Length: 248
Image (cartoon, rainbow, N blue to C red; front, top):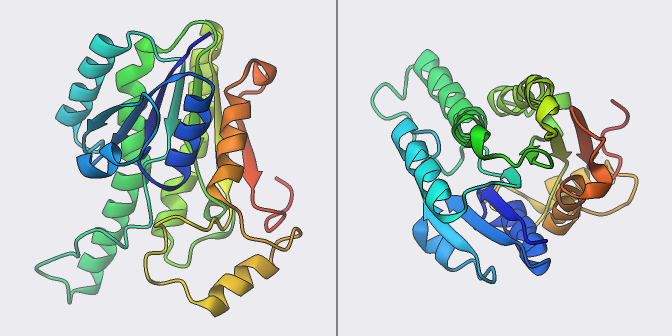
């Protein structure tokens, strides 16, 4: 049966890999992101696209209206939008003020990684398939071990209790809610130009598998969690990091 799959950040990286996986099953995929040109060039067969800043309430309302008109019901909602903030504009006036810089970094991190997910989820909550709906969040290994700056890790860790609360709220409707926390994933824009070969080798050495993760590794996990086989799995965080972070 064809499902309606909504993926934020669906034009690049993990979101794009997930979109291709679901489209390969014949599902109707809607790609969301801020850059219309990126979504249009994604090359996902049969996909719909809608450009919006998911941290802005009015733009998220626009997404909800589009979904209502074009899809009606959402079977799978995947939150892949977000990032480290490296590609965002700087703090502007007051950039030399250390406290202003801290405030900017934390605001950017939570806007990109937490607020986008919360707004989109709440906007589409009534449209989730009942029963059988799936909500999937992308977290990070940084939620467990920190990110160096604190802000990014905290903004991803915040998704965990939100997902747990959602799972309790949506469970009676037959909807599952889970989190996938990747480790180092190559072939994404996450690090921008800041990844050195030395750092790359260090991250790979932390794994038990001896390799970097790929967007396809994470997409396959998302695809499985959205399947009927995973219908009794909810309120969980699934790590995809090759053993770089153990347990939990």
